[in-house]
Length: 120
Image (cartoon, rainbow, N blue to C red; front, side, top):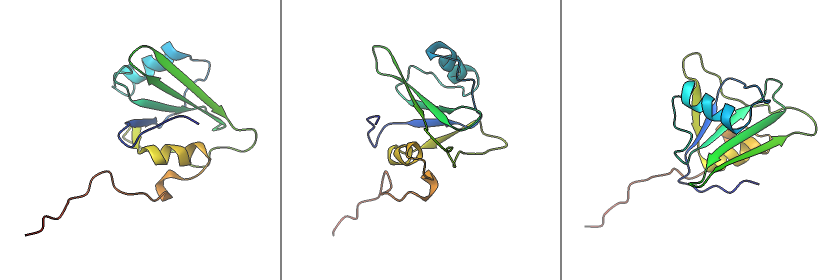
């Protein structure tokens, strides 16, 4: 399982990509289609057309990591759709739900930030 932290930025590409692409090809998609710098430390998540596999591209400051998960059976049932946006942000716990074949939108979890009440 990939290690994530609550502060990690995770961007999921809406459109499927050609999984013959490696690090350089996926980094080009980050720059050209997602309009993001692939060397910013974010995790970029892509899926293949048949929804049986995902790839995650991450830059750690020294080099790129490319992780792939291919399901032995079935498909990833959930994937974001959008007519206008080409990507969607996920929280780190939602990524783990997605990689387990679940629906990240139904995953609970504490909000990233909540106001603290000051006692008077």
